[in-house]
Length: 148
Image (tube, rainbow, N blue to C red; front, side, top):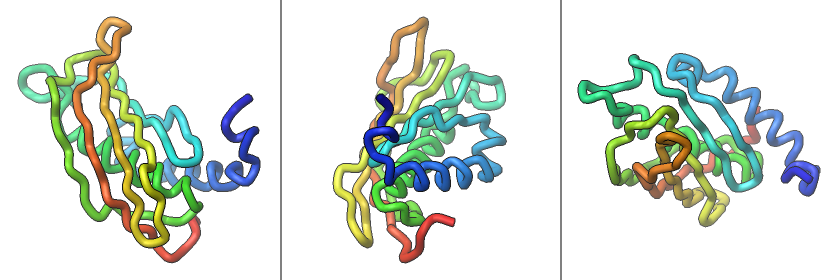
């Protein structure tokens, strides 16, 4: 049974989020995919392409930062169905992201009416094994409006 089946009130929220994400030009430019969405969490992933790499062949740190920024905001929005914006995040790059796919999993630590605290971990898929490449903690400003 899926998370949405267990939480039918989440279905319209998930649909609005997926619709909003599909309209984000930068998501499309980078080629990022929303691969999992549940209340209080989401997963974004991007497949390795030359345009996303830095000079040594690793995923560029900006790609990691983008995934963290977007995934933490999406995760916060799932909690209450509210629009959200990143207020700040602290990103620690743990090791070079040198695999075939970059995966960011975000989860709400503390939902709030005005600010949500969200954690994210980024992994690089290397020959079928996930390598932890970054971790982050974000403060997400909850806007006083529903998702459009």
